[in-house]
Length: 178
Image 1 (cartoon, rainbow, N blue to C red):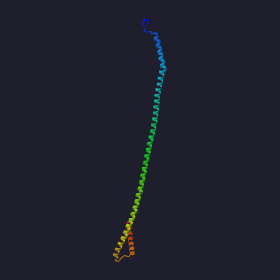
Image 2 (image 1 turned 90 degrees about the horizontal axis):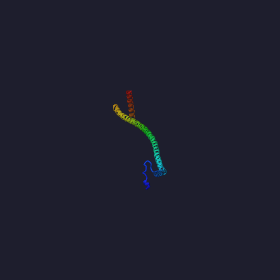
Image 3 (image 1 turned 90 degrees about the vertical axis):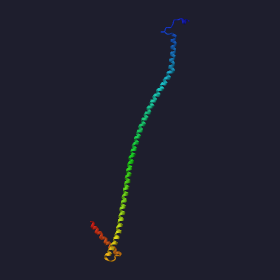
Image 4 (image 1 turned 135 degrees about the horizontal axis):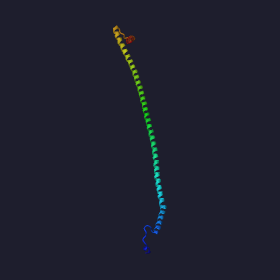
């Protein structure tokens, strides 16, 4: 009771026993925080910093790799375009050479056909001229026989007469065309 009889505590100056207990509790709290809590927090912060920095480093490495791959892709694309252009040019050149070969073969074939046609035409003309000469000769012999009044049926005479007649015709046609 004695304790109760004392005067009320001064609000400016606390009781010294509370100060001692508060100081011991505060010291104990600081010691627990410094011994266990702060090191764990420091480890957690370091892990987060390393994770963030590692993530940034990985992102930068990935970005560099992506840039490198993009540059390689662009080089390959440019190479492929150049190769495609070269193949296209070669195809055009091949097409032009094939076209020239086909045209040359067509010209050769047409020249051969024209030459064969001319040869055939000359042979046919010679045959027609021969047939006409023979027919003209027999007509001339028959006509001459009617004019002369004797038969010119002898083959040797016919040929000689026909040859003379044809020679006269050729000389007169050569003289006229000159």
